[in-house]
Length: 65
Image (tube, rainbow, N blue to C red; front, side):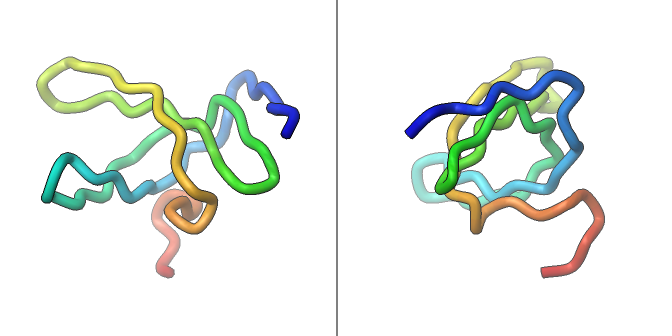
């Protein structure tokens, strides 16, 4: 699956799992395929994660599911 790289991506809400804890975070889209989205998440502690998630875990920021 080819990855579409995104510059100045949309802000989204994304569900992430940290071991047994699920959290919803605000993130920025940095790439996608037909099944998954790569997002960059900046946490309150200053850490930044760039992770892949399934498309179903992502919604536009502030939009109800």
